[in-house]
Length: 146
Image 1: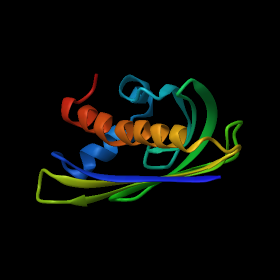
Image 2: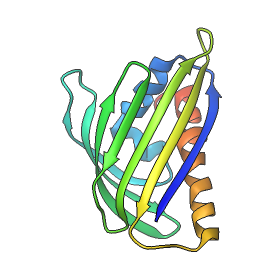
Image 3: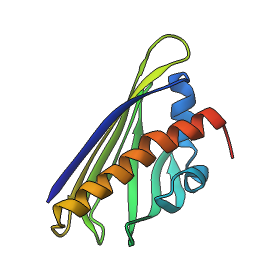
Image 4: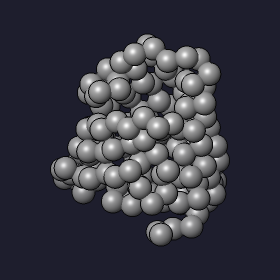
């Protein structure tokens, strides 16, 4: 069962600051209420995370995943192989500068769930994920390191 979620917001920061916050995997559990822990397994030559092991908990369900990240000048994408709760996952952030200190951030996520869930649970979980992915990210970027 594939579940898709997407949303856009404008963050009052340049794209580089947003990508830096996303690349700071060691700090992700301090601002993402869904992440219980995250660890960089290896890095690309430029130092950005390549493979990340993460434990997430949403609505009482915990899942462990290994994500493979790829980075561009104005985007980041990741994919996960099968986990206990998912058959696969694809996520991406696309950043579009709007002036010097504002960036339109689009977040897209596709989850291929291992088992079907009731629509009301999927809807609630999507809202939680989108809020973390954008609103909690915004707070992290605007408040800097915690």
